[in-house]
Image (cartoon, rainbow, N blue to C red):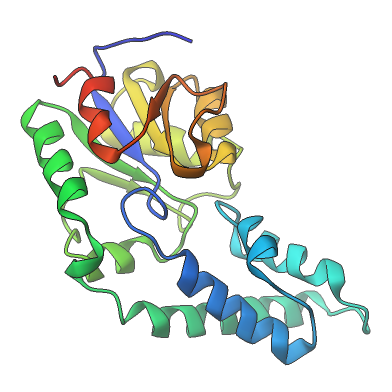
Length: 219
């Protein structure tokens, strides 16, 4: 791993890094799982982090013992989950954006860095609007413009393309090992926070979000 302190851009995962929506995901999937009679808990929910909606559904259905669902039924179920989730997201507001995160983002931008989002979520823009960051980032790559989920590097490579920078000029901030793997596959340095802290494949380890200022070379 290199410690290139001349990054031109930082690409952030959204959920678990900029804000936290895990609980809303859990509640929405739990409601769907209860409806079809499948056991679902927080441990299973943790397996869904950074995973696409349809892949998440397949994980939940591992415990399903009834008649197999058709592809059309699965799509309908995933859409139902998303409708529940989006209703829950309406409860989010600018209070869900910590002052530490916002202050750090502002300092990174003042330091001349481009800021992007690399998220598997199709609701990324809606969530950012709810927390007051609707037009804040220079580029957004999310579940609406990718065909492969992390650990595939597509979402980060697309973000770099939108930011008009080379992969090696980017630093990815992630809280999931699959995200760190995706950054590594993209040829990008990574900064691990939260559940990914200490992951050997990451370039930097962030105890707090503001540690990113040192990792990025801003100070």
